[in-house]
Image (cartoon, rainbow, N blue to C red; front, side, top):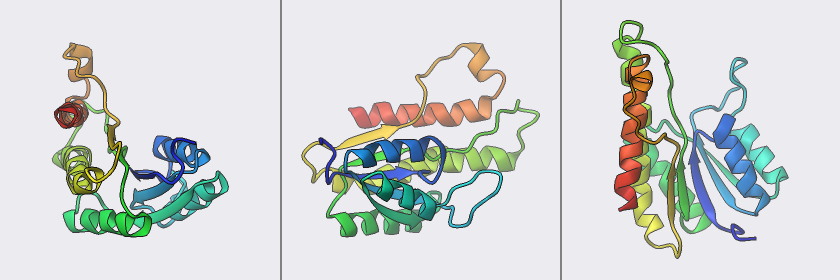
Length: 179
């Protein structure tokens, strides 16, 4: 099992794609650090860091649920340090946490704009920034950012420019980190 005892920190892993990724790595025996805000079930969304941890353990992995808002640097630092302390390092980070609002410019107020950029851009940057020192100590470190290829066709920009800009910023960071 190539991921046995590898530590993977995943943001937004309490539900959705993040949890699905976590469960797949758990089947390979990975240590999963679930970084998310959800500690109480939201009927609309489902899932908490604790319920995800139970599923990860049941799937064969080890789990560390860590409540953190990735927009807040001190919480990111604490989450990354807790992960490194618990499992002895970090082998991969998966930047999955994201905020979405598919509105036009007129439909997207400043609060929604700021939320998407704070989570998608700032949060992704902070998580990766604080994981890099731990990743550098590993033998085969990885950074995976869930973002699209940059495509300047008007269908992607015109209908929901604020969201698309935030996701393209994530893509540009991923390209930069790859260098």
